[in-house]
Amino acid sequence: MDIRQEALGILDEILSLNGRAFEFTEETPLLGAIPELDSMAVVALITTMEERFGFIIEDDEIDGSTFASVGSFIDFLRTKLEG
Image 1: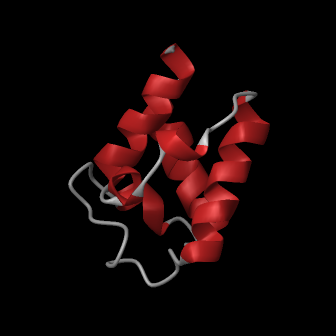
Image 2: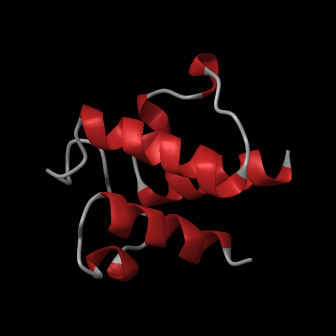
């Protein structure tokens, strides 16, 4: 599984970016920079990751830094999948 592609696919799908997410680099800022990433979208991202990959995300595992950039989002997903 290509975790980067999976992460970009989830961002693209949930934020309705119509393929734009696949142009993002790991340095691309998310929270505060992508208008589509609001509090409801964060909840949808968390729910989608849990459903798609079969893990549970506890409240204390996640904070704003998780969604600071594409890289931090990918790192979080990688940690959950490998952990």
